[in-house]
Image (cartoon, rainbow, N blue to C red; front, side, top):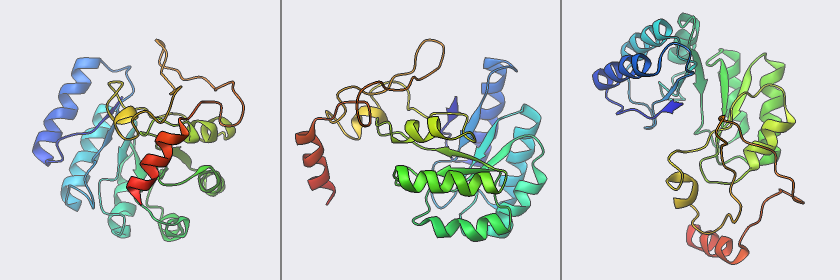
Amino acid sequence: MKLHPYCNFEDDLRLVYKVRKAVGDDFTLMIDTLVYPAPYTRDEAMRMGRALDELAYWWFEDPLPKTDLDGLAELTRECKVVQIRAADKVEHISEYAAMIKQRCMDIMAGPASFGITDLMKLAGLAEANNMKMEPHDFGGGTASLHVGLAITNCDYYEQATPEGCFDSAIYPGVYLEPIRVDREGYVHAPTGPGLGFAIDLKEAEKVASEIL
């Protein structure tokens, strides 16, 4: 489970302790600070990182602005258990060059704005630098699932919960056969042709025209 917290340091600090206590030590937890450019100062991010180390969280996502390369690099070095995931708000794959050079993350966050081609490029770039690449997919489609199935350096498929919030509210009526998580927490490869799931093209055109 990935938490989207309050993005207020003191509230978030209490939250991560309470959630770990509620679910036990064996449950995989992540935290995504959600707001941009970032909710915390460097000092707050470091304090949160130490708490997440203590609590054995899996990853700590976008705790500092993507432009604070020195801060991200220091945080990545100092966190010994929790992994730093960054940065899902990049606009072009070239932005990762400086981040990689300074080792600003343990996990590359594949932006939701990237299509299959760019996510595959990013996965290769991450693999060459001994990193994971974990893509986002809150819109209900399966592009990032296809990428995850095709690479070896990805562990998780993200889907918003509860069902019907992000996964259908962003593009209502577009995905006729959305991917669902089964009772064991897994998603399965689609079996249909092409992307493997049906799209209402009229609704997709409507959404595209509204965006434009």
